[in-house]
Image 1 (cartoon, rainbow, N blue to C red):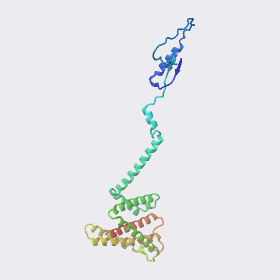
Image 2 (image 1 turned 90 degrees about the vertical axis):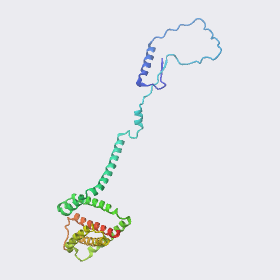
Image 3 (image 1 turned 90 degrees about the horizontal axis):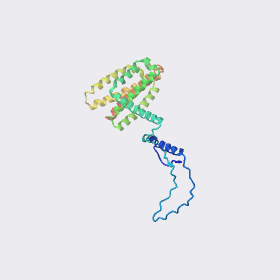
Image 4 (image 1 turned 60 degrees about the horizontal axis):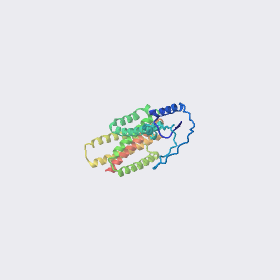
Length: 281
């Protein structure tokens, strides 16, 4: 008896077990003894027509086809690029990181317009809480938050002007800031003595700006922008002299570096806004 494996057979159906068991039972049965024939074998008759094809296959030869069965789910999993868990995990992490960044940026921009009181709250804390603006890293965090909010608000304001006007305003602000800073460092005039006068002028300018909300006059708005530019130019000179100290009447403590940076930053931003109004008109 011969068992030969040639083609595929479904292992899950159990057909191969039946074939193997049948082959084993037939192999265990004894074969009948063959006796020698004394009579001469008759000659084969001559037949007309097609002869039957001869076959070499024995009667006790069985063909068992065994193949490994693969389900459609297993074949799809092998071909999928996410078959490895590490690749899938890295993919999920990247998606959620990008999504988080998008949501943070969007929420920050929306917060500028909805939570405007936060801008003034941070400004008040930095200006009035001396202990807070000297404490590291709280002072850096508050200053960074204030800078981000101020920058976003400036971006919202700049939308109402043309790109060329904004660029001219930036260039003019940079030139004025550099010139006034060099002047404050070289001049022998003490602008820190004008601290009270400048504060009163700022209050008057603030009231003037409120009145202009109800008065539509080109020349009054132009005058307001000019006065604001002059006022914050003087403030810039005074704050630079407060920073350097020396022989000036007023000076800042060396620990007040955050407060000094905040003062000069606000001077430059307000100077830019007033110059932008002048150029825009």
